[in-house]
Length: 449
Image (cartoon, rainbow, N blue to C red; front, side, top):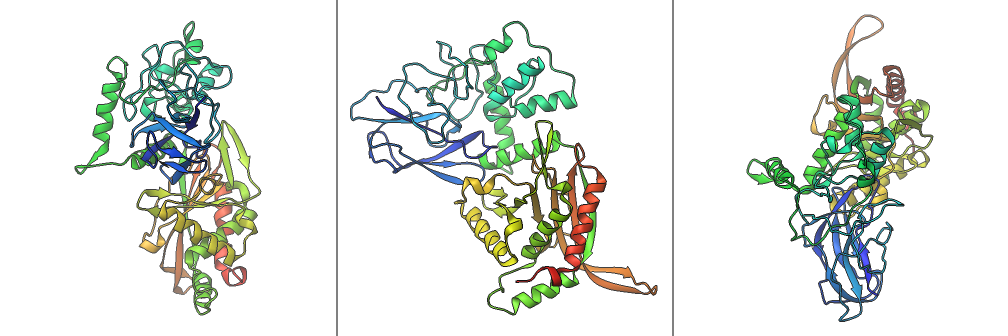
């Protein structure tokens, strides 16, 4: 029997991936470990490898197709072996394989989900995923969320791939609008079943819904006459989700940067530490402040607040692909020099598009530094499920009154802390800023090699 190859789950937030290129084609001989396709997410590129030796019997999607994770995209087997339909997924193992089945199973089905005998139509690179009822498909978590709260998930507009309703869509609808109508008889049973995607050239059979979605996507994708990449569209979607699913507010403060600048000057004079810059120092100070005031080193998931003792610090990185947020795990265990090296290593990988999936997930707090670009103040947007993000602004002269009443100008660095008011009030945020201010102003004693 032939072996199937699926799109792996590349991180907790990745719902779909783009097949950017096929490196092997139908009829090619492949060996286990050979790269057969290049997979792209909004954050990184990934080489999909063959799990077994054999011949690439069939590819089920064209280059440029946006495919949900755990979807079978090709089959490998013996020369001449026939594969007539998209096989059933193997059960969700990243990059996993399984024998080709005769029927079509739901791509993202959870345990206990079954397949309908009739295939569901799906466009391979656009349109709306629809089930036998002609309504948009649901993610597994959305199905469970709707079932637990006895609501009709089809009354909520989906923001997922191809119009698919996600759990966050249902949660926002409950928080910000009228309660979605209860599900009617048999709704939950229907929502828990379906069939997987057929080949990309099959037309979606939604009653006008797919075409409407396609028109809306085309309107969104055109900016200044140039199409917006799928990566940019996914970044935009996540930012909208961040703003609509959280109660964001920003606290602004500043710190005397004299010590910070003194440390930077000292580091620059030594060949071993010349590469350590202001951003490295700010990240180091932030990690130490989070250990002292941990109320903002937290994540908010499914109605529960998780406070973290380890600091997995994320930092916003500008790349040609858009905004990427690499994560330095267990940053509290690194020295200043070790942290600076790790920051630069991850930034280089992010820019090159080669950063590993594990280095893009698991963050507990994020820093966005626009100070080097001269920005004096801004409102950073939360990176859910994190509950806080720090914006670092430019260093500039600021007048302050001395104890004797005279005015002096100091080098001041601006700090903008955005919080989720659902779980973090102003006082914990202010305590963190106070701790950070103390670290910055005592950088000469703190930031040593």
